[in-house]
Length: 77
Length: 332
Image 1 (cartoon, rainbow over the protein chains, first blue to last red):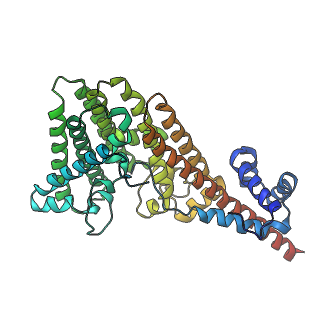
Image 2 (image 1 turned 180 degrees about the vertical axis):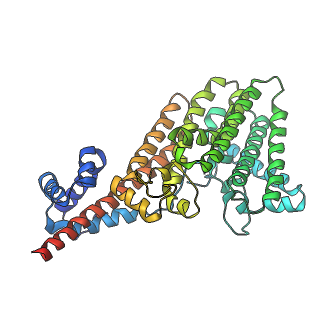
Image 3 (image 1 turned 135 degrees about the vertical axis):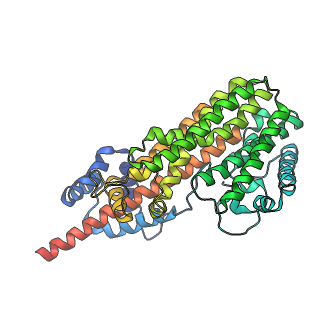
């Protein structure tokens, strides 16, 4: 659920990045292997994410990561 | 989701209650040490305590509730054969769970568990014999699936001895083997209901979910698997390309580094999603809404885990940017 203190614009950027990181293999490669300067440029150019917004963004991604700290399950075992 | 939801109509409910009663009738007539095993959750569910096993509804629905997950497909069977097959299938599948615990060394009381396995296995076979004559095609399927089961268990032993060679094909063989006793229940239902053509698509669906299930288990348990030195296919994907030393098993830290660098969990969760899609696709021509809902539920949960995994990796990447910025500031 969207938190009120997190601006809609930032929320949109977050979801764009989350979606792209899932479906775009080239972006995945950049995030995994390129040096920070390159990653920073890509985030700015593609998602308009700058250094100023990183801390809030990390906090929101942490929430998403924790949201699914469900017990691990499997369909048969 | 890991428990069987109460059946929704009275016939379903009555039959399920009768299956439960039959299990406890079976357990009660066993010699005392085995009787005790039959009433403990830990025998089937692996919990290391003396909690009482409350019934087959505690098990994952696929294990004992397969006939109910395919209710619309097989409800034309009369109560007698339906229940007889459900009982046979449950006992045979429970025997396979116990055997699994014995083979992978999880069973605490090996001797008693071996005897309990024998009791479950014989009871299952005896029920199948009461439904199918020796000339029935069911027995041909039974033998094929039993051979798959054995091959899967044997492959698991083999790969523990030579973990470096563990391939996706091996994982598939093991998963298909483990699901074979469940497929046997379906083979019995298709044969008894005069729908042998439905075995192949349902078997395909079950095999896809079996591989997905094994991968999910291994993705979720990788830290524990390193601790107990249990080799899985997923774990072998977390071994560095050029491992130091003998390269047998990574430490938790080494595996975490590999996972953070290559997003290994994301790759294999995507594979699980594809397998669950394939599982649903395989039964598109069959009326089995409960099964499709069951697989779909796991698809949704896997999707959530995938989102979570990507978010986790993004946290890692973005944090490293902040760390770099701090270093640059200090550097200047």
